[in-house]
Length: 260
Ligand code: ADP
Ligand code: MG
Image 1 (spheres, protein in one colour):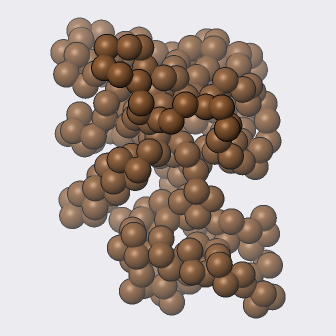
Image 2: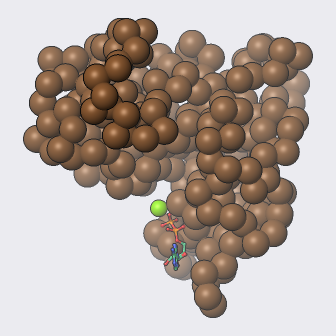
């Protein structure tokens, strides 16, 4: 997963430049006439909670899709911990240590919570029907369900979970692959306040254990309280970045959001 020579996350002394984990250079992707991502060069801080914010349609999800190999960028490069992952297949990017969730939950509605956790690390969900579950995987799935707080629901079909519980299940599934960097697309969107607090607590504790986060989120209170570093997107590229206190007072950010 991580490279043996890579420094430990979060060890840079205060005042030195941040260690860069995931970065892009000139990343671009168009859909027909729409330039969804437009020459985006971004560097995320390793070992930290990074937020990627911006108005609807500013290209955040497309950026995530290009970085994680779900769609191929038209131009530009992506690197992670010093190695190029540009245009690599999603499973290879996952193997490099990057996990992600989706803006709209990607779970199997008619499978149970536990089966969904196992499916997260199996290439083909149909393998689950063969009752050849790896005991280690099941144990790990149960531990992670406890961690995200839905272990009591392991036999429940995913379609019967609340939306917030589905988000927690999805985060649990992401954790099954033990990713070093976790990309979350709107983890709090449509989730009730109690579960938003739980998701925020999970991000904090997982980060304290050394996992890097890159979070797309519209809930500004959450972004400002959770992040160490904020990147603001507008029209497919970053227009501003820095600590939350600096970004929230930047006139370019107000302009992008309010169109003034
Ligand atoms: P965000 O996540 O910031 O809301 P998106 O990346 O979803 O932004 O979208 C950026 C732009 O690209 C939007 O104009 C959107 O309509 C367009 N877009 C995104 N995905 C597709 C697609 N698969 N086909 C065509 N247009 C798309
Ligand atoms: Mg989006």
